[in-house]
Image 1: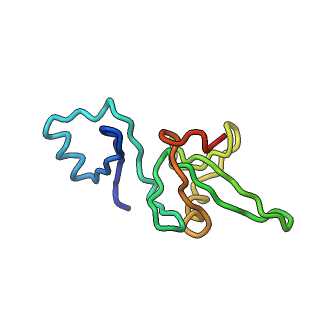
Image 2: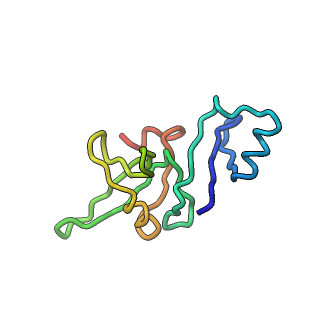
Image 3: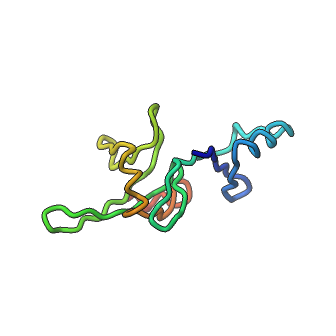
Length: 116
């Protein structure tokens, strides 16, 4: 898996790889004060990369009823997970399913109301 991180600079997300991030720091740019979000290594059903802080939407069937879930991608000490609410967590295996059933609809920084 490639390393990627997005940094919010001048009202937009800039994507850095390991090499470009090292070059940026070597040239004296301090990125520690900026908002950052790390790539999970997964993509959604539309091929969009999923980052920490993204809001994803997917559907699942429960007793013949289709249920829509809108949730946040976050990082805990062991890896990336989906947060259904403050107490219910879905582990990282669910991110693998996003390639088939989920899509990124925003992120918690620019679209926090999507989680309401």
